[in-house]
Image (cartoon, rainbow, N blue to C red; front, side, top):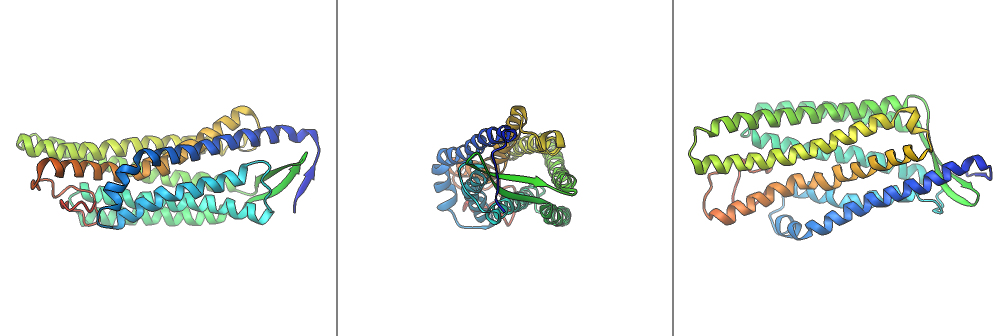
Amino acid sequence: MTFISNDPSWWPHIDAQFFFSYWIVAAGIVVVYDWVLTVGQEIELIWRQRWSLMTVLYLVIRYIGIPYSVASVLGSMPFVSLADAVSNILNYAVNWTNVVMTAMLGVIMIARLHAMYQGSRTMLLFLVIIFLAVNIACVVLTAIGLKYMLAEEAILFGVHVCVSYAEGNYELLASMVWMLNTVWEVLALCLSVWIAVKHFRELRCLGPSTGSTIGDCFRVLIQSHVLYFASFAGVSCFQLIYLSPAFLYSSSTAAMIYAGTHIVLLAVQMFVLGPRLILSVREYHAKLVAGSDADTSLNSIVFQEHVHISTSGTV
């Protein structure tokens, strides 16, 4: 049911809604700008290569960012009139997209780690079990939490705004989801760093050409992984703090800047750095193939579904 009021006490909320909507638009612009910067690489390294699971994951993660941004803007933009049911649908769509994107990024991490551990079935089984446990728990917690999250249309001084409010244990459930995802990301980072350090030590015994090539590949994997993890850690910290009542129900400028920064970082983490986890490795592999013709000394460390590298570029 639409709520109508001309109470002056609502003006801080209206101003906050306007201010917050600018941050959401900025997040969408960042996603589109990064796509423009990398579209040439994408055509060469994604569209013109043989399709695989990684190709599908890349395209879904990359291109779901635009409708995600549109849904976020529609749910927060003043003057856009939305019925209560539509507001709740957009709210559900945004939250479930976060869950699905996080799971897809987890699959990419499993593929990277599987490759780094030389196709170890034991490591793959371990990762899959942990991944399923974390994501099933997150799906259950999200489903329960969304029951406590409601949105309705309000007309305040003729301005259409979407008023969201949480009931019950929403903050606790949302915090548990982020903590579980943080545990997964910390585990993935630790496993990546450990195997990279182990390989760098072993490479000292190899010849300069082979050692340099494999070492460079591990360096590419670690650099992109650490950058992605740093972004995820920042988003997690922002999210956990934002879920405190002092921020969640505040309309102050400081709270809106904090929330807006979180939205931009979340978009960068999922829709910019996420696809680059695949793009960076394919770019390195393409340069390696172009510079070494038939050299297949790296055939055990290219990131793809079947783990072992092939110069066909099916990463």
